Length: 291
Image 1 (cartoon, one colour):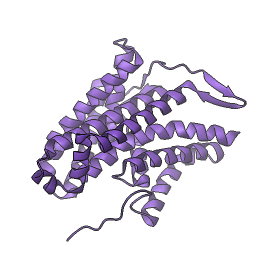
Image 2 (image 1 turned 90 degrees about the vertical axis):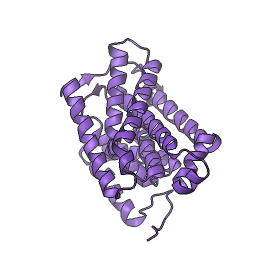
Image 3 (image 1 turned 180 degrees about the horizontal axis):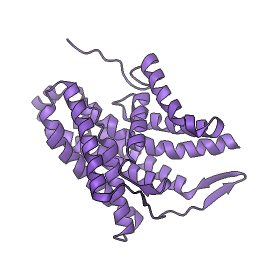
Image 4 (image 1 turned 60 degrees about the vertical axis):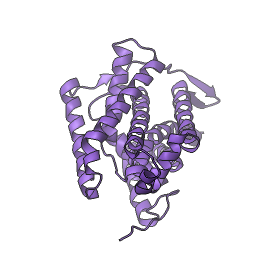
């Protein structure tokens, strides 16, 4: 029974990691950039959700929407200011810029909101459904439904809509996409907007699960979501979902059967093993760079 309980807890956390990982994998799939500022976009989205619920008195669904819209706009602005000028620069330049943007956003949050953690209001009942000795909290159900629902919507958007097909084309070949009349700049902006919005959704759900918000809250979830994206195959949307769930379950089982102090070591140990054994990830494709 303990295994099932830890598995359920892992699915809860894994669904949040999967949402955040989608932002990494979408941006990498389009512009081949690992956006290390994504964890901070998630953090700022959580702050907006916190203010929307605690100060403005908005209902939880509307607060989620406000946080997602804010983060979507923030993601587009960051892409236009920090990343667009470096599209043709060496990848290391864009990577350093992403790390710099991450530190900048952390310090902006530190100045604006202060270093002290703020308690997230309880917006979802802490009661649980009891199935024998197994407990499934309403928060777990809401998080899983929202995560899976948005993932399905994203997959349908990518596969069925004109913009989604354009995103797939740009990820394959930017130059050919431009020749075919696709506005590459718009597609990249849409990608950043969607990825950042999903990051905000994950951030608010994370803040509700561990009820506090603070300027450095995006660091570990952001890194673990990156590991999830690599595990599933960075650039693959289904891979990010699977990687997030696997990582969450592994982390929960480690806490339940070994020690909570070892959970982070296991997560990053998995990253090392994946890079050694299958660098492209579970659903990633091996690609050779043309010289």
